[in-house]
Image (cartoon, rainbow, N blue to C red; front, side, top):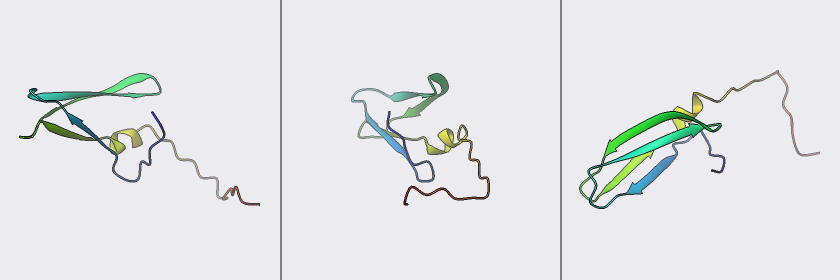
Length: 71
């Protein structure tokens, strides 16, 4: 999966016609971290928001200086 912006909501929409629930397995660095089960709405859709869960595994380090790619 591509990188996602974790300060903003990141939604994963699913449509599972005929099902009563959907399960999302979230892996971080190749390891299963979360298994989330959610009920479907009346139109067989479900929406998972994962950015807050992913932020748990983000280590932000600030050493007091800014690095810029612009020269």
